Image (tube, rainbow, N blue to C red; front, side):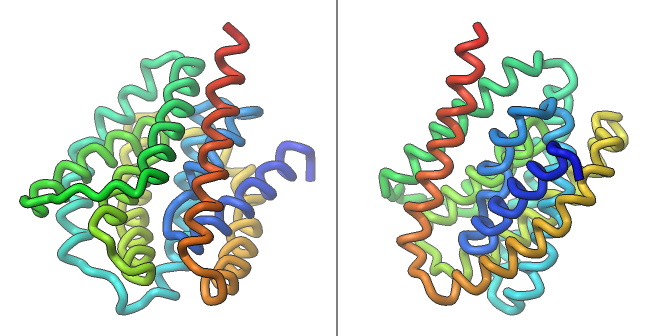
Length: 244
């Protein structure tokens, strides 16, 4: 195993650990770290592939705890946003994309840390809009999670339903994004060979995360996750600004 493959394994392990506990964070944590030694297109392909495996595992462990009335409208709406998101990936300069990813991560971490709760009167409409934004971000950066996580957190779902809804939505989104990337020829098929080293990282990360999920309070892990997200976003932005 070379250095890059070892790094992929460790990053995927940690990202899987975070997402198996909170229901989100795989791409948010892993993307800025992988961007240090991989191109954005490669990172997106690898993260979507790894997230699909992870979400299938967590879906099995959260049987009967999701709400299809939330998941399906949001997913169908996300399909509208995926195509323009993937197109942006084809035309935007990689350095600009990396900077935008980092800034987006920082913005999301601030919102999540504020504990601000917005009263939403038209929840069905909000669900559709969140899905569109999530699809666009997923196609462009693989970061489809933050809009959905913020929405479900705002709706104050309990930790079991929160995680179950997120992983099911993400799994559907992963499949759709992979198909769109394949037909629009933005998928880096070569990186999937390195993705083989991600599979053990996903398996181990989910196993450890499930053990921790049952014992540690969601509040504690929320702040741990926010700290990691903020750190990764800061590193991603500052590293790109230094180059300029």
